[in-house]
Amino acid sequence: VQLQASGGGLVQAGGSLRLSCAASGRTFSSYAIAWFRQAPGKEREFVARISGSGDSTYYADSVKGRFTISRDNAKNAVYLQVSSLKSEDTAVYYCAARIIYSGRWYPDGMDYWGKGTQVTVSS
Image (tube, rainbow, N blue to C red; front, side, top):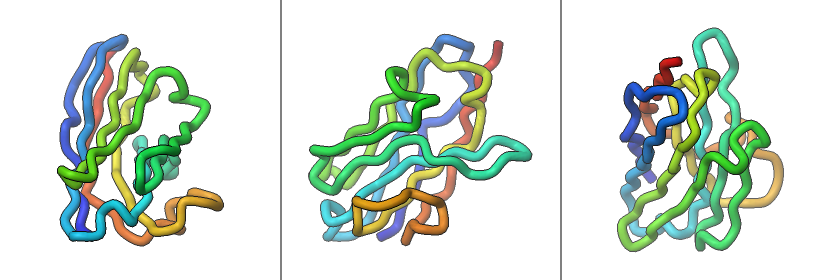
């Protein structure tokens, strides 16, 4: 599966964006999708994940209550609604895919990656 993230931009603190992850392939619903982010000088970190069917989601504590992940398998797309943005949310955001939903979600455990989209939050 090929992935492409989009929707990033420059936003003021407290603002919102909707990030999109477009995927190719006929078996998109077989893949669990996660969003990761990487800030300058920092390691890539997990943000949120969603199961292939969309009925299970999980968030990093740092974004819980502010970010919402969803997917539309008919459109081969996953979304990340990011709200109440803070300066510390500034990063390049990546979507990634793997078959197995259970287990730990580390960057090296993902099978496919898309190119990232930059989110910059100004204070």
